[in-house]
Image (tube, rainbow, N blue to C red; front, side, top):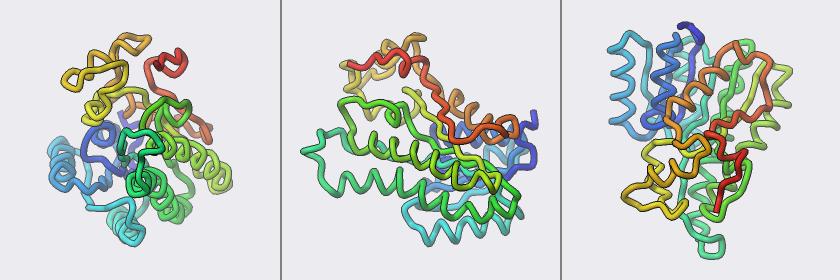
Length: 260
């Protein structure tokens, strides 16, 4: 317990899935959680759960594609909690599963705006606060598809690759400020997004879990907490010598290259 005691952590897209799991886990380990999302009902429920269990958390409505709102919300978070120590860029959108030549500009831009530009905006506006706190940690949620390709979701995979290189670049730029920047690369995780990609390994839309389990060298897909524990490590001082790194949490699928 207490692995992130007294740290103020912003988690984007924290209302459901991996973000929600990270909110719960980091709160249990002593962090103050600033949950930002556009899903107000789920976000407020998550915050209430944390508060009811003795944790400290607040919710802000924030669209990661709206730079002026991000600037305003981050200022409010710093005023509320006196500092910011960690940013988790988790908000994301998988987008349309179409081949590149069939994808519209609007479909491409929506994915890139949420995933890549959202990471850029949030990083841009948290840096001054991390400098004021004498350093901190930025954790960017990418994907195994930020490391290797597969024949689907071209905009999503492009955005996840962008996040990987953004992380390495910012790690080098801000190392002198004691700000660490790392990316996490989940494999297939049992979250609401899993059902959006049933075509993997001929999965049935009504039973994606079994087909995804069959892809894994370990025989099962991951749970949101598997990624949350990676977030906890990179948010904590245990990872004080870790920056510009890629934390792959995928049950071995990346190493096995088991894509058809």
